[in-house]
Amino acid sequence: MRVLARPQATAVAGPTVAAATGRPTGSTAAAGTACQPCSRVLRPRQPRRGCSLAAGSSLDEAAAAAAAASSERSAADAVQPAPSGSQAADFASQEDLTADYLQHCQQEYGKPGLVEFAAGAGGLPKAVLMHPSGARCELYLHGGVVASWRHADGREMLHLREGNAFDGVQPISGGVQIAWPQYGVGDLPTHGFLQDLHWSVVETAWREPGEVAEGSEQHALDWRPSISLYAETDEEWAEAWPHRFEALYTVSLEQPDPAEPSDQEFLRQASEQYQPWVQRQRAARAGGRKGAGAAGGRGEDERKPLMPSVLRCLLQVHNSDDKPMTFSTALRTHFATRDLATHSKFVKTLGLRGKYVLDYSQSPLAPRLGVEDGHYLHFGGLREQNSLYVDCGPQGDVLFCPGSPAHFKVHNKKGFSDIGVVHPAAVVPEEARHFVQLASARAVRQVTLQPGETWAGEMVLTAHDEYWPLPAWEMEESSGVPIPDQDPEQMPTLRRRSSQAEVSLLESQGIV
Image 1 (spheres, rainbow, N blue to C red):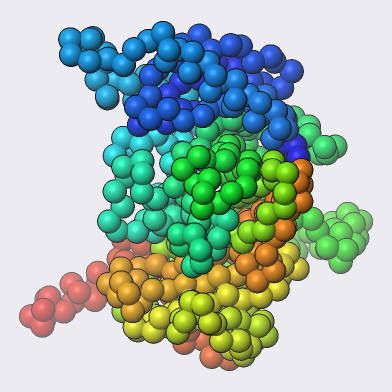
Image 2 (image 1 turned 180 degrees about the vertical axis):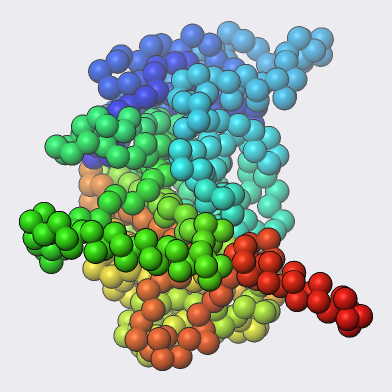
C-alpha cells in the first residue's frame, strides 16, 4: 500500500542516526530524490532497526530500507568496539548525543515554524507540528503518542496521565495512544504493544497555500503540516505475537476546508447579483446590529470563536507474513475536561443514541449488551464507564463537550467502526475528574489480513471553540448548556464599566 499522497514532500535524504535513548530513526527523501547512503552511525545502547523511505514509497520498500540500515549499523558496530574506561570519556555526553540527534532530525525533516524536533520529557525525542493559525501538537517517537494538542490561544485539549516515566521503555499514557494488535484486555498486555515501540520518522510534509493540491484541481488553502512514522515486527514480541507486520502512522494538523454552499445558498447568491438593493439592505442591517451590540456592551470586546483545529490520524497496517493475522485496534484520545466535580452536567457526548453498546465495566471479558437510549452520555461521580458502541462509521459523527462552551467532533472516516468510551472514575477518582477517553476503534468485528494485504483506519478530530448547534430539546431546556467563565477581564467594556460604577456607588455609601 502506498503512503498517503502528499502535495509536497519536504524532507531530504540523510544518515540514519541513533538517538541517545538507544533507538534509531530513519530518514526520508523528497519525491524523485534518491536516498544517500549513511555517512555516520551513532552507536546506540540498544540497537534497533531504523529505515530510510522515499516519499510515496510502499511499505515493502520501507522494510527493505530498514534491513539495509540495520546491516550498515551492524557493520559499523563490528569495527567500532564498545567504549570502556578512558575511551568512554572521549564520547560526548548523553545530552550532547540527544542534541546531535535532534539537530539531525531538524535538518533532514524540519521546517521552522511548521515541523520542528525537540527533546521532550525525560529527554525523549518528539516532533512538534505548528499550524500558522497558532494551533500545535506534540508527537513522541516512543509509542507514537500525540501527547499535546493546543488551540490557537494555547489551551491544552488533551490530558496526559499522571505517573508517566518517560524512560523510553514504558508506554506513555494519555494524549492519543495507539492500541494494536489488541484493544482492551486479552492474551497480550492491555492495548497491545505498538505503544511500547519506538517509531522511525520516514516523512514530513506540508503544503504551500496557493499551489494546486495533488489529486485536485483546486488551490491549497491550508499549510497542513504532517509527519509519518514507521514501525515493524519487533523481536521482543515475536513469541507473544508470531506475525510479521509493518505499520505506518501519519499525523497532520489542519484547518477545516471551507464548506461548499448549499444549492439554496448558491441560488440566493446568484439572484442577489441582479438585486443590488438586497445587498444594501443586508449591509444596513449588519451595521445596525453592530451598532446596537456596541451600545449594549457587545462591541469589539466580545471574544470571537477561534478557527476550528483538525487533528487527523491515519494508521496503516500491512501483513508481511505468509499467514493471515487477526487483530483489533483503536486510537484512544484522552480529552481534557473541566473539573467533573463541579461541571459534570456539562461534560457529555452527543450522537450515540440508538447504538448497540457493550458494557465492560462489570467484567472486561463478559460484556453486557444493551442499546443506548439517551441523547447524552454524562460523566461524573464514581461510576466506572468502559463501553464500546457498535456501528459508528463514517455516516455519523460523535460530539463531545468538555464542560466549557466548546466541543469536539470525532469522525471515523474509514477503517474504524466503533467508539470506545472509558472513564476510570472508580480506579483513579481524583485524576478522572479532569479527562474522558473516547476511542475510534475496530474491535467488535476484528480485522483479518491475508498475506500481502493492508488495512487503513483514519480518525479525524475537530476542535470547535463554541458549543454545538442547539438541538430542539436543548432550546426548550438549556440548563445543560455550558456558559463562559465570568472573568471581569473578559466581560464586555460597558458591562464592566457598569459593574465598576455599582461598586463605586456602594463604596461611597459605606456598604462595601
